[in-house]
Image (cartoon, rainbow, N blue to C red; front, side, top):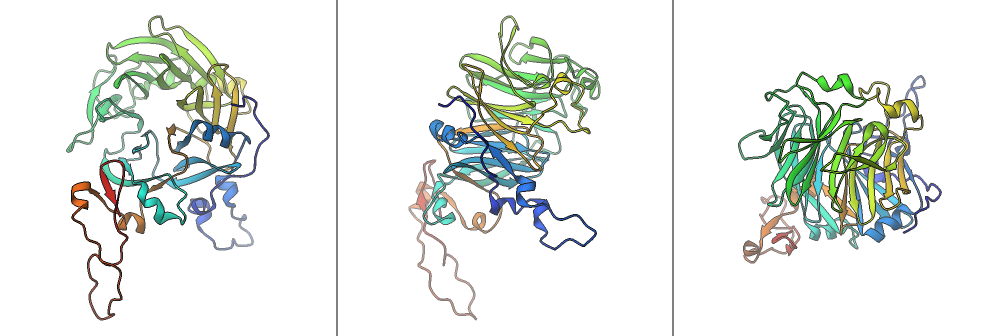
Length: 418
């Protein structure tokens, strides 16, 4: 794997999806006294090192990126010598969890669930180019809880950080959310963002480590000491593992180590879970938030810090003027940046970064005709489905059910799709 960043490649916005961006939707010519409308590249453009596509192919993975600020879920997909940046629009997308079969995405007021139906790929392109198609299956309305990170446990249940209520939650069929744990210094549940609980790490299938920006118990009390008030807590023991962090995010248990992004310093760190000692592994040129690993590589999200953000009174504001937004690729053995993708347009703040091993070129479908006409059935029911061949229907006759849709085919997860 090449550890030397190459020269920046060309703009890589995916034109069909980029056209759906708010700044590019209106094709009406601007008035003479109005500024010219931004192009797709200006809104959703990016540049990347030329080795980024090969790194993804070598790792056999794509990368998903959520940006609540731009209202997009972005898929970074290798496409020849370029990274194809594929944009899907959601209402404030934040935390997510994804693998080859499933995708969960936390948005403004809901958690959306998707399932991979790969046989739908043949309806998207001929010949098929997608190796996964995540179709929307259901949505759970949580209300506005400022949802942050999420992950599946060993039994397949989703756990997520409810930042507004300062707690760790799961779901049931009737509640907005089910509180399962909160820091011992938070006295009660209240929609007050008391400590800015934000990050979640699973260990051996159990929700184990969380990050917070302050050890505080008042309405947005964490804001008073953003510079070094952060901490990591062991959920199973309620023990604070380490304090004094500068805006920690994205804790992860990987390679038998606890990793964390110290966002306020732009640092990827490891933490000794017994002593709390922190060790810098790498530094990156931005406010880092969103972390995942594949093999020897860490994918790290970087965000710009705008003048209006509350996250400005931190060390990186003082000593890093070249703050960027994008995804940085770091070799965890050497701490060197080996590749990056930098957004050059409207994508300024990133929340989650999720690698999906085993998938290189996926699609996400959450609206439209394809969602209305693709069906998943259990294998047993599929064997009893008979699909009539398309035939000409008289114009004065009512439509015949079952006519004119593609025949179903089995998929890997025990269901079938048409």
